[in-house]
Length: 290
Image (cartoon, rainbow, N blue to C red; front, side):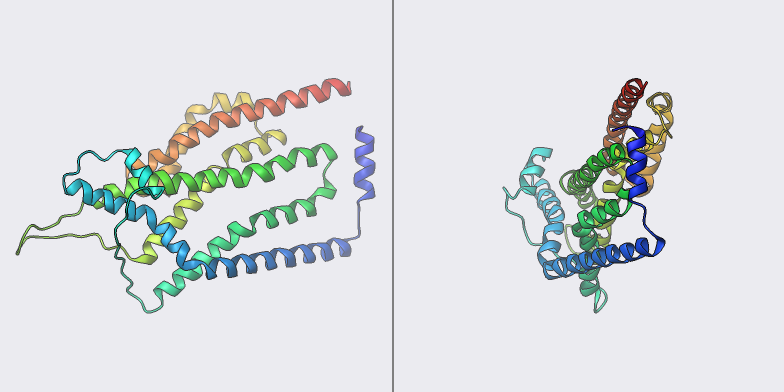
C-alpha cells in the first residue's frame, strides 16, 4: 500500500465532530461498564484476594520462625517452595485500628483490581478510537504493544509477589526484638492490614509501570524521538536514573531497590534492541519506497 493509498484511507475515515463525540461517549460508557464489572468481581472475591496477598508475609513469618528455632540456613529455594504452597504456613495476626478499616481496604483493593481486570477493554477502546487516524502500517505496529504492555505489567507484579515481598518481609521480621523473659524489652511487628495492602498495591503498581519501559521507548523510537544510538550513548545516565527511581518507589532498604533496579536495567538493554529493530524496518521501508 502506497502513501497515497494511506492518505485516501484516512480521508475516507473522516467524520464530523459530532460523530467523533458520539463515538467517544459510547467508548467511555463501555470503559465505565468494564470498570464497574471489574470492581464488583474484585469486591466479591476481596477476602480470598487479601489472603492471597498476605501469603508472602505468611511465608516470611514461617521462615523467620524456623530460623529462630534453629532450623538452619533459609535459602531462596525454601522461600519459593513456601510461596507455591509446598510448606505449611502458620497463622498470622494483623491489626485494625479503625472500625471500617477492613471494609475500606476491600474497597481500595476492588478499585485496584477493577483497573487491572478492565485494562484490556480500556486499551482496546482507546485503540479503536484513535485507529481511524493512523496509517495502516502504524495500526499494525501499535497492536503488539497492546499485548506486550499487560504481559510486562504481570511480570513486574510477579516479581513483587514472588521475590521482593518475601525477602523484604523476612528481613523485617528478623529485626524484631523479642524478650526472653519478664522485664525484657520486646518489639514485635504487628502490621496494620491497611498499611500492608497499601504497600503491596503501591509496589505492584510501581513495578508494573516501570516494566513498561520497553513499550515506552519503542513507541518513542517509532515516533523518531529517540534512537538506539542515543540510548546506547546515555546508558550511564539511564542507570543512575533507574536507581534513583527505584530508591524513591521502593521501601528504604537495598533489597527492594536492587529487586527493581536490576530488572529495569535489563529491560533498558531490551529497549535498545527493540528500537534497533524498528530503525531497521524503517530503513528497509524507505529503501523500498525509493
